[in-house]
Amino acid sequence: MAKVFCVANQKGGVGKTTTTVNLAAGLAKVGQRVLMIDLDPQGNATMGSGVDKRTLELTVYDVLLESATISEARVKSEKCGYDVLGSSRELSGAEVELVAMERREKRLHAAVEAVAADYDFVLIDCPPSLSMLTLNGLCAANGVIVPMQCEYFALEGLTDLVNTIKQVHANLNKDLQIIGLLRVMFDPRITLQQQVSDQLKAHFADKVFNSVIPRNVRLAEAPSYGLPGVVFDPSAKGSVAYIEFAEEMVLRIKTM
Image 1 (cartoon, rainbow, N blue to C red):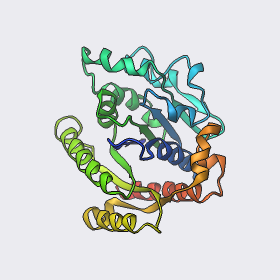
Image 2: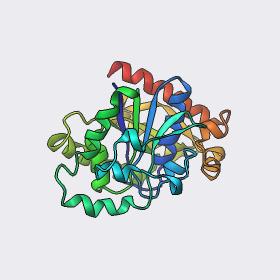
Image 3: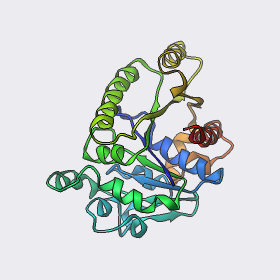
Image 4: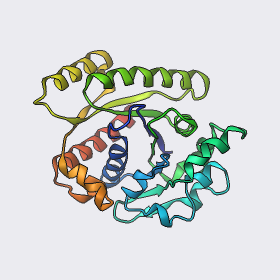
């Protein structure tokens, strides 16, 4: 059965989508069966996986409204080696439509359960706000992967996210836990980043992943080619770091 993970952080611009697509590609490279679900109406994870969101007949929007199943809506990203449940602009309308519906926060959970046997990992790219979409992701997941920059404001945002996860755990999803914090865009030459990294380790201990993703130009360039960095330039420092992170995730799952 698949392990289902949300990649979430209420702060924008911290590399959630970059982490989702590169982890998906890294896991595929180390032999795992992966489904990537794009829950962000911007559809960046869809486009960054080599899938054109404008050509999709069915998306996660149809799955949430229960007019299609994941089996019907998913597409294979041939270049990246994993399946994609894509997103489009329509998804922003789902927020309003879901409000009046029954089981509104559990719809993704039910859809993912139906295909869980097909995969080893399901990764969900969440929008940066705490919305009905993010709530669906958190209710469907076994755990949360939190990408974060080692900066002061990131620590403040992390406190909010931890409180949100506690509330969802208490009220909606007893399985939900923080799997780990991933330090991204890391530059060891900056003293403050090193200090925040040390604070994270002191406070969260083994919840901080050993893998660290460095600041890397090739990772930043990759989305403009519609690919994860791991596929676009496998030898780049950032890509190598994401493959190491994928291997660490596989090991962590075995001990969960």
